[in-house]
Image (tube, rainbow, N blue to C red):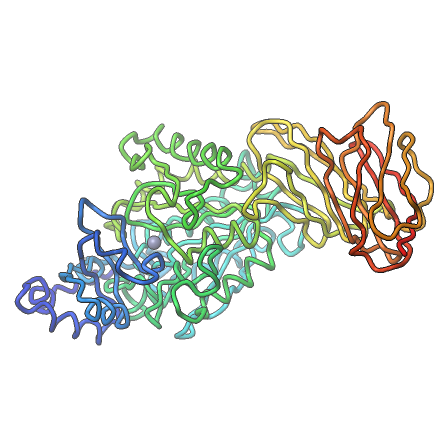
Length: 556
Ligand SMILES: [Zn+2]
């Protein structure tokens, strides 16, 4: 192993305030990124501060990573700041220069060793492990992911889950732990929990999401690693944000971001975890909204389980904030983060795992961090085997693309969608939930499902076509006048079950109106303004939780 340390005169100079500005500029020229501290009270004076790379404030001071542009913004705004030491520059990096040197998991693999390890996993376990590519970095390094599953060459109907680490290139505990986790799954496969996970999930692992930042000083050392990528952009502020738009940081989407977005979209990951460093805490959505996620109690539950499992090994490790867990926004607001992007736009469930108190831990501490975490890494994936596992088809059994939401529960894009193969997964804390299933050209259905903790609920939904259906099944109901030009009245008498929805389809089966019926209206006359519909033939459908009925309606 080789040990790299950079304890330059530059750093000494940097720490002397008299020379502060000049070395900062020099450092910015050399490595594109510096760290300063400033008064936390000044944060709000910075436009789009929510997409800057602040650390959580300590007292009334806050540290922030700056690129050249941001450095200039602070100067222009006359916001005072002082240089801070850059941890990765003083880091004594114990590096492994071969796969063999990683056998005790107490070194950081250099870039070539990392590539070799990733390839070796796939070579050694061709039935369980496949090497996949997410994309390339600014400097042409590889963004890689391992797929680990039984029948790994086949895309099976199993939940796809994703562990990804070190999009901040200087937060590297997760880098080594992810490699070790892949090794653990592959070497322990034939038995127990590991077999259950590998057989029933498609597990993707990306140990290094920002190799240009990690190897900013060259492929042989992580000394001098940067948080940002080679364009000095913080990748965890570079994603579209549900509150602040497509480019909250004012930067173009970086190659790393584009690659990750398309990879995640393609795989439709249902649960994921994103490993960082600098604290010991699990951070759950949202980072950008102060409001809670609809499944807040589920997030707290799985985070609590992770931290509590860690605490069976060490009570002091991972005990920051609420004994190891926190709501993201309550801790500090972040825009453009991956966690909210995945959770909002891809309808996934992502947690940010701040896995070590310092970003770069001494390599000798890596095995202890593995021991703290590996049981929890297994538990978290196991949660993907629970919850509702659903399949939506038409009456002939063909898979349908559908939206599944829970009225009165879902908000802020917390609903889920099926894959192209008609499968969906919904993870919820125990309870009874009424799922509404919507598919284009089909009659919307409501199904109540009982969810139990640590159990899987299987649901099959067969969707009905409205076109050509003229008879009705559910009690007596009528629409008048028919033909109608303005306001239509629906009248019904239902004995067993309450009407809860009215839909109108046009002749080609396109849904033109869908209305939930409020409880207080369910046995009354119900009027509907249809003057907005073009003249023609329509089908009016009503349904309750068991059945549907249709009538032809002529709009003049
Ligand atoms: Zn980070």
